[in-house]
Image (cartoon, rainbow, N blue to C red):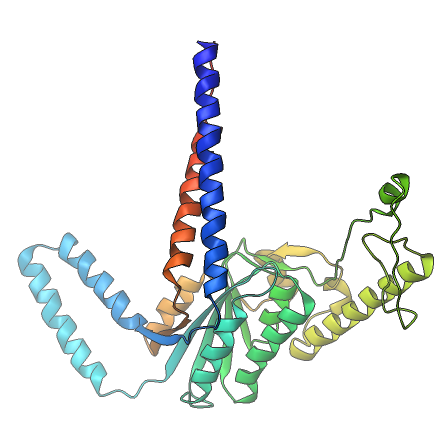
Length: 335
């Protein structure tokens, strides 16, 4: 039996190796063929209609035939009355942040499009934000993109369902109003950096690393070379300066917070963050948007880039590999 199980394990290892090699080849081919970024397209979805369709589906299931027809007639009358009303608009954007703030490529296009049509002092932008933060320069630019909306006279609301920490909170702080679900993670107003140093390992194996710079602090800490106390001090000084800029940014946009109390690098759940004035309201993004639909015309805005078929195929192969690994990890061999 053990011999059969060993052969089965070797077969699975060969299959996984083949699939991994195939995925790598496809990704390399896709990278070679992607010589220029294709132009994307804007998509607009009427949120009011989506909720109306969901409500109608539920009523059709809950009510009898006559009662449902009666409800439909009443709804048509209500819709006809609403047609003559001049409602302000709310444009809903989404930002799902990673370490590099990759979603910024979409966000800046969506904001530019909105600024061409939105009415200052009347329309609102609601950003559904999820991000644990990442690179300082990337999230600084993302926050600056949101500031464009404020400069144009548009009200900006940020909704956080899960997390807006570090660079994510830097973005949220730009908003006129921050809404967060009760257990969303908020804050982390701090700066962190770390890197390994292999100098002693290389020295032990008689490997020399030469690093030449023009400028005393062109390099402070390195991965391969020998780090000096002066370099460490300069590195820490740079972190402190970045933290000061972060704190100043938060104070500029949310002067109600006690910055020395909240800028310790800690994070809080939204129920705690509300008391610290890091946010303004406890609610999920769904609750906030559904409430807006009663008085406003709400639209979701997405800027989408077309994905080459090789990219899509690579993603599908990766999903298959993930499922195989998950299945294998659940196997238990019983003698």
